[in-house]
Image 1: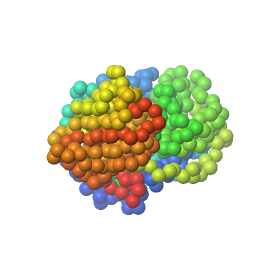
Image 2: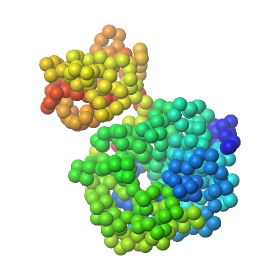
Image 3: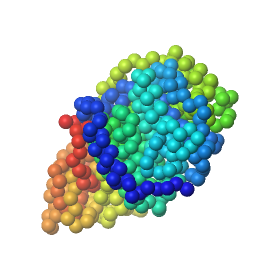
Image 4: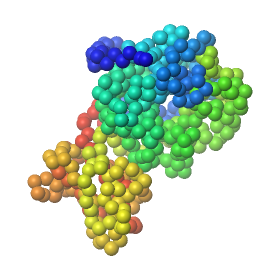
Length: 476
């Protein structure tokens, strides 16, 4: 069983913040728009799933598996980096901690880590040094879901959140520049850990305070509409789970991922089973994705010795022969900054004009974009409202539809017995984002004047966003 050193988390985070302030190299802080464009222009990178599951023939490991299992006797991260270069990739991303909680870096937050394995080497450092030495950018992967440390649904405590903050602080301060942190196991139907259970905004701000130019990507954004940037700097798509970028119309900076082998982590059949066709990867996946501002990250699983198998090496070299990085892609359009705060309207009391049959009010603030409040077709001036806590401060309202429909409407807030206008005009986008100076109110209402078809709202969301640094803002 691990020894959870909860008492040192906050102290350690404070120390790390002080250390980075003294030692971090100075670089200009970029706007989020610049970072998003830089990411899209990277085009192609390598995912590296390497952790305790490597030794268990499963993608999800036993959370009580002994650290003694982790013993890559020929670990060679330089081989990985050179293999990535052979495919003309531009970056790597390693699983620092997967869902079973084993940390492959020298962490001070738990004994369940690589320093208590036979290897006794910081794999994250070995990886970061090797990829950087080969001219590749360094990304890190981190799982919020952690079944070893009991960070799972209905069991989350403040100590768990302290652990997450302390571990992310280590990752952001010990390994030089990290261009992106890909987070997994958060707000996904299979993890069932919401952005409220582990507060997204607090974690996002922590990352940006330590490395302002680090992109934050949540790998579980599939439930959110393709047109909206919710809880991530980049839209993400796990292709193996059936998530697909719209290759005919995507306009958002995106990431899609898929394994070269038939599992994310290495299994004993990998050396002999065929890998995915390099030609199909290039022609059917990589090029079409790049054409719609989507970066592709291909997972290659190291074996139990810590090396890539020969069939993977051959495939990567062939990909590099077939595909060359053409440099910067299409310029991204002007985009709204991502939503990162807690939704104050979620499951609050809602009211509306007459609904259509059973499609009543709570469908528009149930945190489910697949359901909608639908106005009865006989209503000439439909409206929808949510009741907030009395005297609630807020500064953003987002209206999401299942398809673009409403085009002319007003947004108002209620305080001291009076409705006050926040927006009155036209916006035909499917995701309608309204940001404004902070107001205090008890209710928010949308009144619809024009729509192409029967009025419906998938989600009406209300936020009280805090001011963040220029790197986390989309435009200066």
